[in-house]
Length: 91
Figure (tube, rainbow, N blue to C red):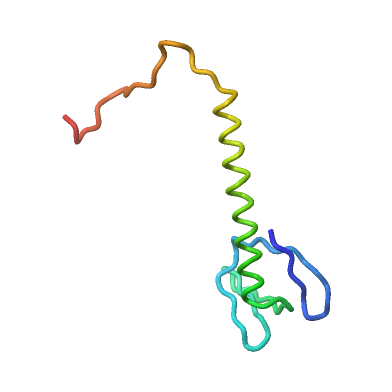
């Protein structure tokens, strides 16, 4: 979610995954995948940077969680993953 500002000055939070495109006409218009449009104060570049920061934060958190899972997970000695059946193309 990213925080944006309407031309009236009111702020709102938008799910950045729903953004289809951003136009500068000269006002910045954010168009969502469902066709809804929002005219905002932020420039297209500021919105793109906010989306990058948001997605980067998600990736960073996910990497940290994956690292902590592998540190705490223990695989019993002698146990390994094996194929249950052969892939049809390998016969």
